[in-house]
Length: 264
Image (cartoon, rainbow, N blue to C red; front, side):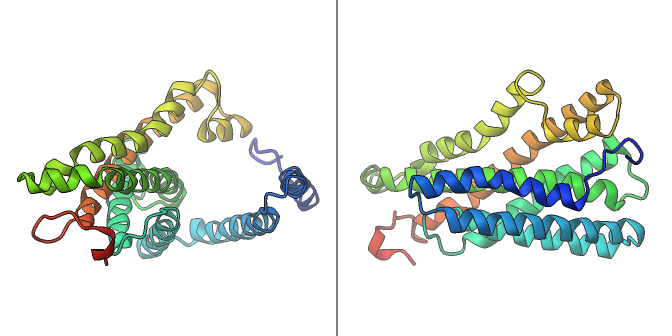
């Protein structure tokens, strides 16, 4: 134990990998075809998190504003790739819209929290900036993927209605409004559900980590409240931006809804 943190040895760490046998056995027994994916995901989890640990150790010790910025840029690029890969619909130019929505939401809300709540010194202090922006980006990434996928699925399900609305003189924004509302609502649901369950059903990550490190429970609860509120705000900004930046991709420049054969 060091500074209230219970240490985990490498032997215990690798022994814990046996927990993945549960998912592996279920996949094998039920012939789900997920065994290889489970193995790859487990290895990636080990490698990526240990690498992140070593990188952050260096970053915390030798931090500079440009190095912190470089790490944040890499995080946004990776989050964009993961988010777009989760969208089932093929949408040309989606990556740029997702990149912008994640960049703006994570940096704007992250700056407000780091500067206005935590009062990091210096402002680019990696020990505060990287974890805060990482939490924001990870949640926004998943929410954006859900919202965009729901948006285009809903637009396609309403294809006949869209053709009729546009033919009657509706603008793309007016025709797509019900789908935009449905997509934004779907993207906001998970974080709102987590907020409702926090402290009753679950003890979220930030609070759990601080409790394991020996922090005062009330202080840990205050931090978690800030985290939940910032995630709600950032998710909303990211979802709204991504939805409004992408819905026009189902419309021609002159405003007509594109049939499948006319899409890029």
